[in-house]
Image 1: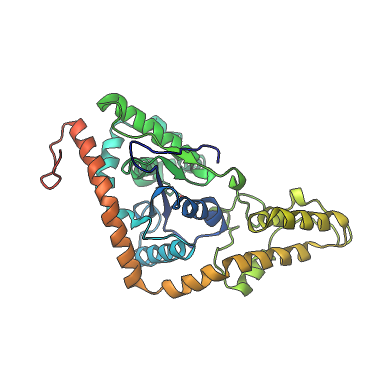
Image 2: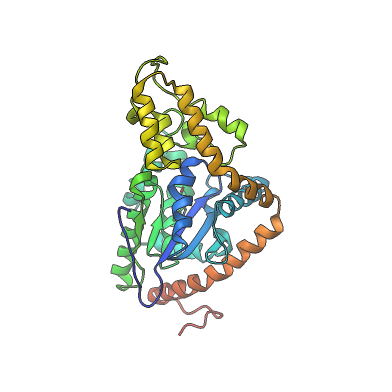
Length: 344
Ligand code: TRP
C-alpha cells in the first residue's frame, strides 16, 4: 500500500469506502485495481461499497440500461466475494443525502479546481469543452460527497482515481476552513503499488475508452480468444524473449505465485517458447482463478429479488452514517435539523 491508515479511529474501526460506476461489464483492470483490494479490506475495516449509479447517469441515459447494469455490477461484486453481512453494499441513489452534500460542496469548490480534472481536460483538449454536461464537469464533487458523507478513512481505488481523491481532500479542507475544523474527515487514497496500472491488450492502460479490456468473467472459450489478442513484439519462436517488457507476462503476475513467475520468466529467456505458449499459460491461470466467481455470478445475475434485498439492506446501514454526517454539515451551514433527523 502506498498509504495506510490503520488502528482505531475515535473508538471505531477505520472505515473503507469505494464505488464503482455501473457502466459496462467490469474488466480485469476494475477487478485487480479496485474490487479485489476492496474485498480484502472488508476483513479489517468497516466497509461501505456502492454502485455509483448517479455517476453512471453522465453516460447511461436509458432507464432499462440503468436498471440492467446496476444489477450486473452488483452481481459481479458479490460473485468476487463482497460479503453483504459485513459490508454495507448499496446503490448510491438509495442514499440521496449524497446529492445534498454535493450541492453544499459545490459552493466551496472553485471552477479552477474542476477545470484541472483529467477527464474534463481531456474533453476540452478534444475541443468538446463546451458540450460537456455540467454533471460530467461536477463529477469530482459528487465523488467527494460520496467519500465525505461516510467519514471515510481509506478509499481503495485504482491509480486513475488518485486525482479525484486529492480533489476530495481539497474540498473537505476548504469546507472545514470556512465552516469549522473537524467537520469533514480527510480521507486517504489506498492504491496498491503492485496494481498501479493494469495494462490492456495493446499494452496501454486497460480502459473501456481504448477498447483494450478483458472482461473479468468471460466464459473460458471467449476468455482464451480474448487473451490470444494480446499484442506482443514479433520475435520468432526460437528467439529468447524478455518477460519484463511483455504484456502477457504483465498480466500473468496478478494470477500467479512468485515461483510460477520465475519459472515462466525462465522459459521466456531460454528461447523456443513462443508468445502463443505464454498466452496459454496465462489463460490457464486466469481461467482457474475466475471459475468459482463465474459460477456464483451465473447464480446471482438474474436473481433481482436477492440483489434488491441486499442493496436495500446496505442502503439502510449506509443511511445511518449519512444522516449523522449530513446533519453535522447542515448545522455548520446554519440550516435547521430536518424534522426527522433528531439532531443531538
Ligand atoms: N469515479 C470512480 C470510477 O470511475 C467511481 C466512484 C464514484 C468512486 N464515487 C466514488 C470511487 C467514491 C471511490 C470513491 O472508478
